[in-house]
Image (tube, rainbow, N blue to C red):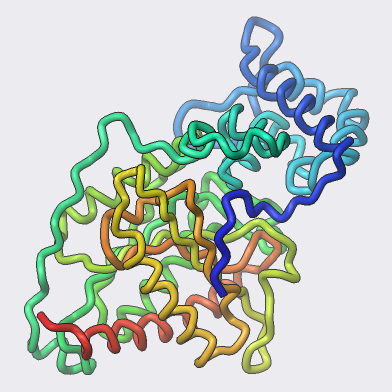
Length: 365
């Protein structure tokens, strides 16, 4: 199942609420910039040890003070739960920015285009959702791995697969486990732990895996993909033999969409995202799509219901231009537990091994 949807946010809103959404959103975005004297204050308990201490604007202060109930009632009438359920300690402005960035609408113009359908067809708005950095790093060329080694043969490989796992949104966590949707100071409570489990399981299957725990958020959610591109290119420079690149996330949609039962256990479902914006130096995206299709089909065969399908985002590339086998993989969502996501990591490792082995047997090197 492949979905081609530029604005697939799963957030249907009544026309009247869309108007309120745009108005309130603009006010919040402007207010988050008000850091003059007493109009701004520090956000307690957020972002410790991950860069400059975040600050919150005027409306965030009202949120934390006596006006909290009023703002909650207003936001409930216009905005989805992921926004208005942000903990007061996180700050309304920060929560709003994170929520927008996760949905690819982090810039004001893209935000307005989401609320006003007539603006969505403008190429400038689409491109703004995922811009390459001004000084884009050079992607190292793939160096073939030696075939026929004893190490590869011991695991039934033609040559040892070289894999990179990283996390653009490394602070994503699981609400039932941590009580928060994002954890900024403990990678073991985030998607990073899931990536570590996937890496260990792939190593157990005979692959050579580099797992990056780099902090790509650095207290600036909207610049995360530019930061993770630096992370990826640095890893490829250190080991240009890396052939597979996986950006592991968790989604932020209802639990009913991200959960299933397999072999008697509740597990988080997979979702494969493929960026296909050729204008962002990404002409070979169809090779990534073909790889995603193989993974989805294999997952359906091995674990029916595990995969939610493939989403083709025409406004993004998700740093997938770095390799022909590069994907963004969502493991569950924020409503899943850590244990559910960890179980899925083990299943994903077996799916990847099967597909990669088939690629090797059919490959001419």
